[in-house]
Amino acid sequence: MKLQQLRYLCEVARQGLNVSAAAERLHTSQPGVSKQIRQLEEELGVDIFVRNGKRVAEVTEPGKAILAIAERVLREAENLRQAGKDFSNETSGSLVIATTHTQARYALPGAVKAFVQRYPGVSLVLHQGNPSQVAQMVIAGEADVAIATETLAEVKELVSLPCHAWHHGVIVRPRHPLLKEHALSLEAIARYPIVTYDTAFAGRSRINRAFERKGLSPRVVLTAIDSDVIKTYVELGLGIGIVACMAFDPRRDRGLRMLDAGHLFETSTTRIGLRHGAFLRRYVYDFIQSFAPQLTRDMVDAAMRGGGIDFEM
Image 1 (cartoon, rainbow, N blue to C red):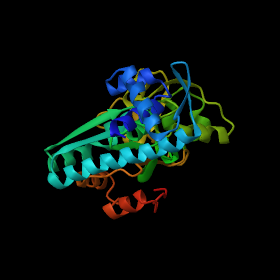
Image 2 (tube, rainbow, N blue to C red):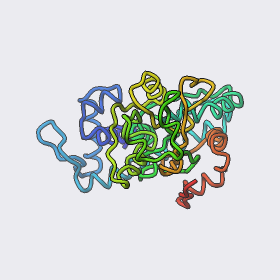
Image 3 (cartoon, rainbow, N blue to C red):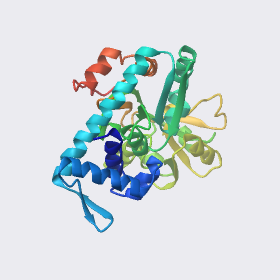
């Protein structure tokens, strides 16, 4: 039995039983992947996959148990490598962060700057995507840390740690009628076309729920994954914007005004997601605490052991 066989097996499962896609991801050939999995099945004495001709159709019951064990073995093998790196050189390596545009643009710069200054020998990489993509990058081992608002708390493969609480605001052009409202309300907002986040991003589910509870059907004319895109189209007069308050900078956004909407929409929580059982190098703990000072190493370790710190900020 070889680790390579376990990697091939798990990658086929991750790719929805598509052997060609797994081979492409592993930078090898489809016959090579199939051969290694067949050899593993012969050694174990059971079929892991049900096949229809050359196509893998489903996972057998023994296969499900074997896949779960294989995933654990691969995680522990990676942990061994990381432990060796950590003890041999604690100031070099790489840290890959998967996050959304809003977090990368507005929440992370301070922590990233501090990290780069403290660990100049560590290569820091930011991958951007929607919250589901961000979670999958960490699950697949393509990233060390996930940072997002939506989704992370619901992904069972990840340990989810609450970092920062934030709320939404409404952005408008100068002299917009909403600026004269004595008290901003959902009813007033719903009178105007709205530009806001795509449904998977930045607390959009909380925006939707707020209007639904009031029985309102706002006219959303454009959605985007990028706060800067939303601000651009508000400046062009396409509508009013609903964005994370952290995305508004009065010095840079001089052509816009922000109205606080914290009383209208539920508070959102930015979370860090880590893969269960992952070995965290010292600089990963340091980055986490730089981004969320309340998350000490002891707290992170307790959560990774299953102790949990799942509280709202």
